[in-house]
Picture (cartoon, rainbow, N blue to C red):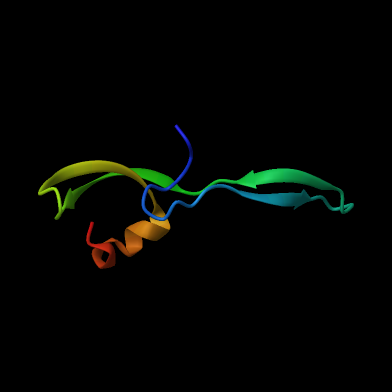
Length: 64
């Protein structure tokens, strides 16, 4: 399964790991994905989604 938030569609970010001698090597910054059961107002049932923690903080605004 793709490491991607189902609500915000965020994915991993590319960056550099810089050593003390300033040698740059590539690294991947993964998002913090959690599996969460939430109540869907549209479907009137519980759904299980993979969501990032940043989107969890604003779940009450989204009204899924």
